[in-house]
Image (cartoon, rainbow, N blue to C red; front, side, top):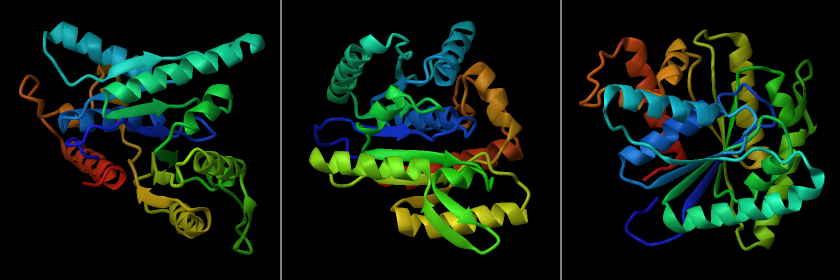
Length: 268
């Protein structure tokens, strides 16, 4: 990302066709990382019914209010799904106008998507410059990308999410955006060096070449991420002068994970 040239925002969509993969944790930490580097950042929570990212930011505002301090804060928007089918076209138009307006005012727009496929989920991908797909170290989670016969080691047809992304790529190409920076992140990963985890990562490396994404390490399944959520904090806030919180070994390791992930997503 280049701050020196006036241009529309880089849109980062964080998405997977299943819940519980840590999308909101990645969205929040990435937003704070970019804010700390001097970028103007807006966040959009399209998982308006559950609203995990929105709750994260509400917790952060409450924490700052109680402590009378200022921490980096993205400009945040929450969009709930339209239940009336007849009003969906109008809702999509309003979403388009929102994202277009944000792109004119910010350096980065981070969109956190629903964990299930709906019209907001589908629309979000059409704005993407970078797509981040968190996936846990579960053999079941691989099925969204490809059908795999683990006994024979055979990779079959694309899974539902990979098929959807292929359609997204064709749509973006037709709109004059021939390249989608798709990154699959090994996220909420067990700290144990299990055979299951090794198998998942081996297959993701193979699938990357076939389906056109980059596979990078993400975040461990650490308790501190859940604890920090309650106060709206990230590991990047820990050494803020107004907090001066003592960082444990686990905090330091988590901070290295976040920095490595941000650098792999948005290299200089």
